[in-house]
Amino acid sequence: MPFADDVSLTALSRLADNVALVDVFAGPQRFRFNYLSEPMIQRLQSNFSGKFADELELHAPLDFFLSQSSATVEAKMPTYYARKSSGRGAHRKPGYSRLLLPTWGDGRVQLLIGVVA
Image (cartoon, rainbow, N blue to C red; front, side):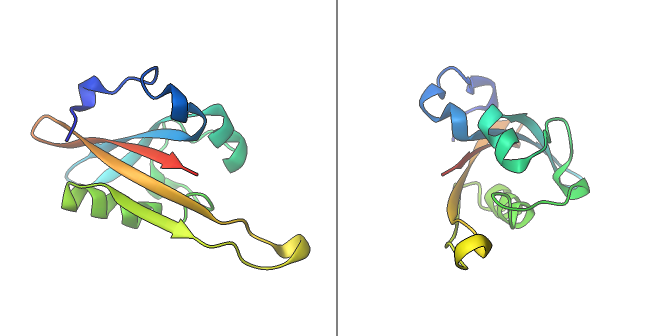
C-alpha cells in the first residue's frame, strides 16, 4: 500500500480529470473530500472539497460512496463499484465505475484515491 505522503497529483496526471482525494478520519470514522478535479466538480454540480461525505446528499457518481469507503478502509485493499446505465430517452441514467485505493499514514489508512470512469 502506498504512503499518503507519496501521493502526487502531478503523478496522476493521466487520470487528473477523474480523480478525488479523500481524507480518512478514525474514531469516529469519517471521510472528507480533500480534492476534486474540475471535471468531477462539474459532474457533481458542486464543489465538495473540504466537506465531509456524511454531511452531503451524494448522488452519481458517488452512490454508495460511504459504504465503499468503509469497506476500503476495513479491507486495506482497493475496492471497485460499478453502476450500469438505466432508463431510456430523457430518463436515461448513464453508468459509471469507481475505484478507491487506500494509502497509508500514521499507522492506518489515511487517504483514499478515488477514480471515476
